[in-house]
Image (cartoon, rainbow, N blue to C red):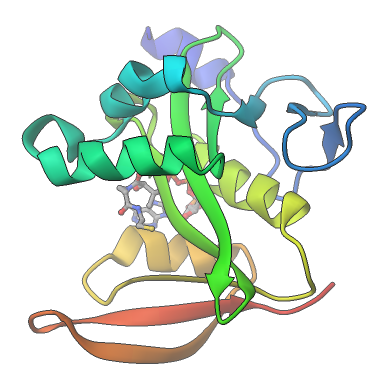
Length: 175
Ligand SMILES: CC(C)(COP(=O)(O)OP(=O)(O)OC[C@H]1O[C@@H](n2cnc3c(N)ncnc32)[C@H](O)[C@@H]1OP(=O)(O)O)[C@@H](O)C(=O)NCCC(=O)NCCS
């Protein structure tokens, strides 16, 4: 994308989503200003998800996880106003039976344009229950900053997953 086009992208960090007629998770949603569209990812999106994911090219394990996420119908893909897939996110409800954002990933060329925050906001809008959890490594400053800006609070940490890099649990309260 040209630098001039990038400058045109504007995303409200607290957007209101317009969901499709089917209501919940399977329906596509657009931001009110229609700049960004998010929908449930399907198997045909596999290559696009791998292109977004900075780890997938070198990691068969990540590619397997992407296939699993697609099979579970819990994966969502975002396209910018030019239709190019720019981000994906995964929402589950298996973390102590609570809504949990497994991952948010923005394509490298589209970082710092609000897409990560928009994906978090979208997943929040379709999450079941009043609590939303997520996590990231202590070393992942950008994701921690995104959580803070999106109103999440720290809710503890887990040692011994990645050596020397605790997993910080984040929580978004109801409302
Ligand atoms: C973390 C990530 C999803 C952020 O996506 P993004 O689209 O670049 O983030 P946004 O543009 O929506 O940023 C929203 C806010 O988050 C914070 N933020 C995002 N990236 C940041 C960075 N590199 N440094 C500091 N703060 C950052 C800022 O507060 C930012 O608001 P601002 O731009 O007004 O200052 C992206 O860096 C990414 O895909 N990283 C690799 C995958 C990953 O680590 N995912 C998290 C594991 S679940």
